[in-house]
Amino acid sequence: MNDEALDVIEVRAGRAYYIFGGVFAANDGYYAEIHEQKNGRIRRVARSLGLPSREVAVAWMKSQDCFAHAA
Image (cartoon, rainbow, N blue to C red; front, side, top):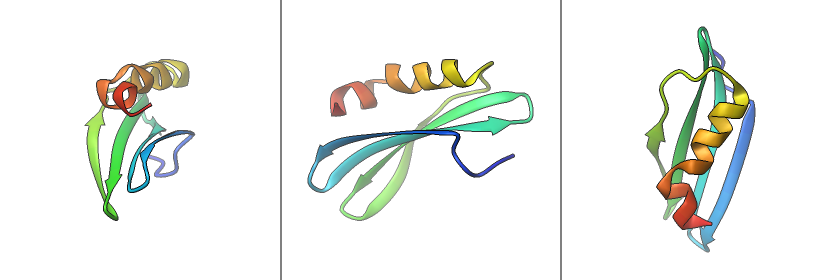
């Protein structure tokens, strides 16, 4: 598995609050993760299961509520 994101999307929700996500390659396809950074701490808020393509992984990331509300 590759630890470097293939695609990264950042949504700035406020001065001390960020939402960002990345698409990663896996052995059987791709997966996406969404993280939030608040007060200097980063936590993962969502992770997809295996997805068939990078485009589908980016679409999954953009469709999540935490991304939509932060934009």
